[in-house]
Image (cartoon, rainbow, N blue to C red):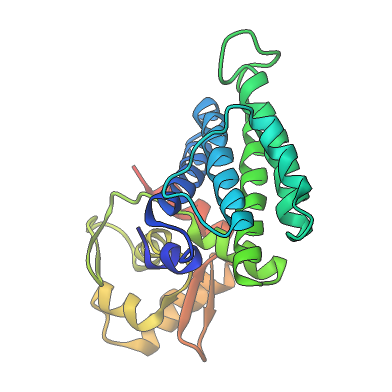
Length: 250
């Protein structure tokens, strides 16, 4: 489990934190791979984990692992009766859970006989509802703004990059036929959030900062593949860069 995940959900027991972020990352991974049915199915697992977190937040004590109440709809509605809890926790999140669980159960995903076969439209709804739920949990648990919470949730998405080897703080791009720009994109795809320029140089065994900036980072920044902050010496992958990096993968 990444240090970012541990810090963002530090209030949760390890098992519950793993259930929550694991279900979320499965949704994101399956959606990225165009596997619509698994993406939608994992929406149900996320619902159960989020419900367990919200229920624990209200009670003041978290369960060690996520669990599904016997009557999920009734349990979500019961949360609304906790008048002292923030409105998001007792009304907005539970109602979103009900809608997400309905897609998982009655749109041809969880069993035969649903109205609609698994498809990209439904999977997209599941993905973005899941991001909203995760952002709300981050916002509530850390008293952040909506924008700050949304940014953290994007950073929580874990990506499997088989072409990148890691060992503690060390990283290496295993393919030897890639340009430096391509190597940077893969390394940033592997790393959640922003990376230090110095780390990228060390991982790529680059010594000349001036040429690295001139030939690699600034062109990537100009093409909007990365956000390069020269003052802070930080680099972050942008959505066009994510797409470009994923095209490199086998």
